[in-house]
Image (cartoon, rainbow, N blue to C red; front, top):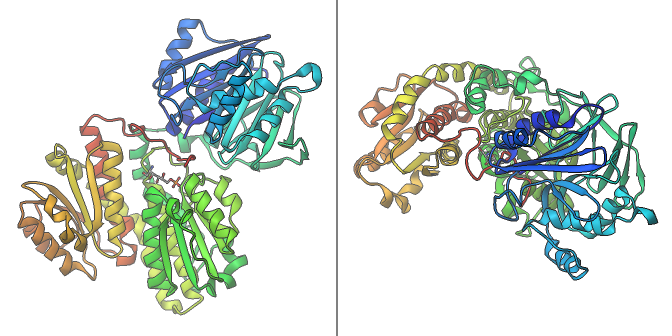
Length: 613
Ligand code: AGP
């Protein structure tokens, strides 16, 4: 939800922190701020809006000096979007400043207690309460230094946090901690760079300290120490950062979203590489081998996710039942975690998440694990929280996804869920020949996507015909019902046009009342086993004046007499078709957002990873 970055070392902190903020801006961009300690004086600068506004503010101040600093780009949870509520926050008594990603759930009661002790608050945020509590506990003359004060405060709060704290009375110390929100500590030579994710660290460090929940790290230029919030020493966990810089550079593209749409063929090739043994007709997923027997003997699979990841998980449900013949269901994580779900023995839960940090998905995973389910993760960000908490999993390997609107992660998730289904199917009833045939078709999907990308110009032209319309429907059947949901979400989240995705047949049970003259209705009408039914639904829409935009199979002439516009895709096996039929919908949304003049990569109100509930 927010991006935090912090630095302690021997270089000037400000340029490094600004670079880090720009890398993290996709995580939240309401406002931003920076604090440094120069000698023993704490200085803070903040600005509303993009990081560029903070740079202008810093220029007007002549910049902030100091080789220790913290910085934050905000997605507002508590408190409106203004300069006062922007982080970093500071106290009045000791020059303690902090940045925070997460939510302090019991901040109101703590604020009341602190106000009763005479503390005066300036902002509406929960973060200021945490900072004030640290300040209230800080008592270096009696042995409560910054590390101890932070530990003490964290023992009192409930909620999620990733924080970095500095104090002008201890200018050579930084204290970081996390619970439920992501935080990594990049290890440089005589320096550390702390951030919410690797993208702000990789140009400075190739290894990082990862903190488990309730861990605290005390950093100085001479070294670090990690403890629990009860000050019990912990042995540090260090990981290799698997990301290189060009993966997160924009290159020749105007937007990350377009770059990531165009990356899909190569991203999928990386995702599939080394995982399809066509001689044996077996999928090779090293991360699942330990649990292969349990997976094969499992009685039910529950897939859980949010947003785009939920749509790919819905396709996973169809794939598991269709290919592996195992009962499967897909649930919104936010619903699953609270509805007291039934988890019989030999159940498997699959958490699908690009970021591996989505709070609801993590909580649903915990709920299923607590009830005895074997847990798998289908995740893109290596070393993120969910894969650290599942029994096993499969990484997408599609590379960092920066655009807030998820694209290559969707096709990567569908590819991985296809491979997991084949992994199980082949160890249950599927023959080597049937499995190898599907694998051959799966290997052709990247080429098919390349063919669709060549029609980008035509997709832009068709989008322009309808972009002024404020209400759209997206309809599909079978495997492409979730694809229709995904197409609607893409259009909504970056063009702000209202769109609904649903099963094509459901339209007649109410939504058909919405159709008026010229309303754009997008059908996924590729030639599959419900093709004729989709044609009937198209007729029903046309009869009421709707304008049909059909995603159809190359060579299909019949559709041309029914649809106003046709977006062609290559013929593809139905169970693999969402990876191909989604691409015109991604490009349609992209062009609609451009035509409407919106910020494609940082759409309003959104953030890349929803790490709060
Ligand atoms: C998709 O375009 C959105 N950005 C959003 O729905 C996203 O898919 C959802 O928040 C889940 O994120 P995750 O995959 O990182 O868990």
